[in-house]
Amino acid sequence: MLHTVLRRRANGESVEAIRLDLIIPTGKREGQHPSLASIYRAPAEHEKRQAYPKAVEQAHADSAMLQARTRSARPTSRIIADQRYPPDFRRRPRLPRHGPQRHR
Image 1 (spheres, rainbow, N blue to C red):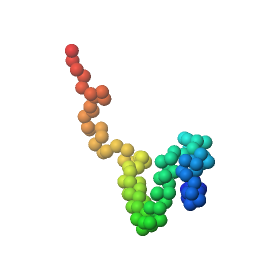
Image 2 (image 1 turned 90 degrees about the vertical axis):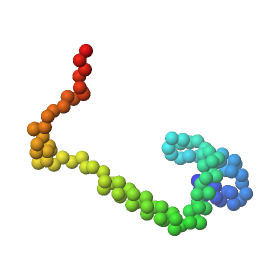
Image 3 (image 1 turned 90 degrees about the horizontal axis):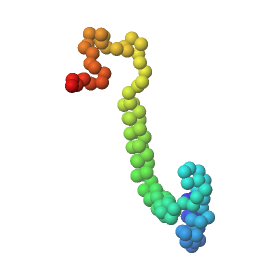
Image 4 (image 1 turned 120 degrees about the vertical axis):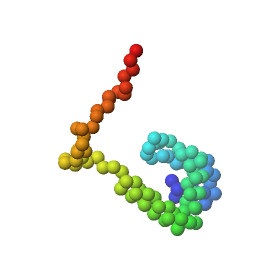
């Protein structure tokens, strides 16, 4: 979509005319035309990426670092056979499962 918009805008066509020829290929809005906001946004984001390539690289690096950090911080669901329960599990007093019962 971006290439088509950039090429046709360079030829002097209006965004409204370009919109009618574009069709969304996949997703929730498959087969529909993109909104005017999407068509205006795509070239603007492209220009930003071209103007500030180091900022884009830094943002990708930061995102990768945050994803790696959250993956390592997630608790694992594996249960170790020897340590299913703490050693003093049977000695602990049991609490009612549904909270304290009220007497009427």
